Structures are given as C-alpha cells and as structure tokens.
View 1 (tube, rainbow, N blue to C red):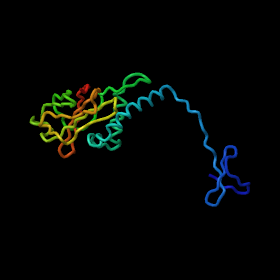
View 2 (cartoon, rainbow, N blue to C red):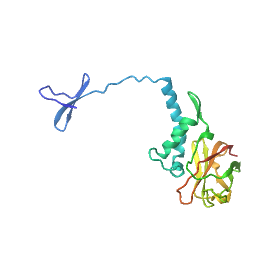
View 3 (cartoon, one colour):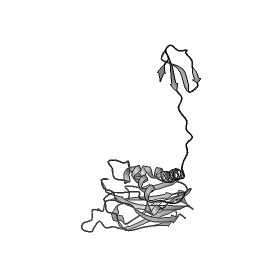
Length: 210
C-alpha cells in the first residue's frame, strides 16, 4: 500500500493499480497478478487421491480423537490421513479406491485381542474375539474396552462403540440398521479402562448388512 502525495487523487482502478480512501488518506495498491494455473497430471492425481482419503478420514474423525495415541508433531487425524494416502489408496486416476484392509482406525501399544471376527446378523454386526488378558506378559486387561467400528462408504457414515464392552466379554453386538442393504467395512480395537493405552486396530472384513 502507498499514500498519494503531490499527485492527483482518484478512486477505483487505473491500469494495474487501485486508488481508495483509507483513514483520511488517499492510497493506492497494486492489483494482484493473476496467473493461469497449469495443473500437471501428477498434481491432478494427487488431488483426487487426497479427496478420496479425506472423505473417509473426515467421517471417522470424531472416533480418532479417542482411538489414536497422541503424537508430538502430527494431529491424530493427520496420522490416519498420511497412512491412508501412502498405503491404502488403489487404482488409477480418476478411479481411486481405498483398500480398507490397510487402514487403521486405532493405533497404540496395547495388545489387541486374538482371533477377531465380524459377521452380520439381523441388522447388527456381531464381533467376536478371544480374550488374551489371562496370558502372562500380556499388557491387555480384562476391563479393557472394545472399539467397534462399522463404516459404510456408499453413505459415508460411520457407527462405532467405545467404552461399552470389556475385553473379557469375548463378543459384542453393534446395531447398524441405517446400513441395511449396503456394504460396510469393519474394525475392532481396544482401549484401556483409564484411556491411556490403545491397541492397533484389526480389520475384520467387509460385510453386506441384511
């Protein structure tokens, strides 16, 4: 910005500058230079990959606040976004997809359960696992809480459960009636009763909700 001195005063555009009145003074500023952006094929592909990953990560972001361990330099959402971009995007531009088996929805040092599985049953997803908290040297405890997650890509909706079912229960049912007739992706993880330890999630497969 410049102030006008010993020149005629004007307002509006004059060539590549704009004259205007500001705090009792006549000023001028240069118009911004507009450039025709040329986007390379690689940039277009990157933007599309980013959009595909971002749609999913944004949907599950409320869960990630609880299911990802703190990181000094990255937000919890960015941790999952970065991993998804690098490891889970498949296909060729413009038809990119997510390989959900390579996505994690929880991450930490707590030991997961064993033999985790999921199946559909009358508008519900039934998760089952083997409780390993009784084994010596395992940092998992019977009162760890299961993290149960069901995501529907077609609706871009996620249903999840936290802090409800103990590791020792060995099974849990998650109602998913909004997903009737749709394909869903499922994961399970665990979080300690005090919330300080979190396990890496296990992908428990894709299901069709009937």
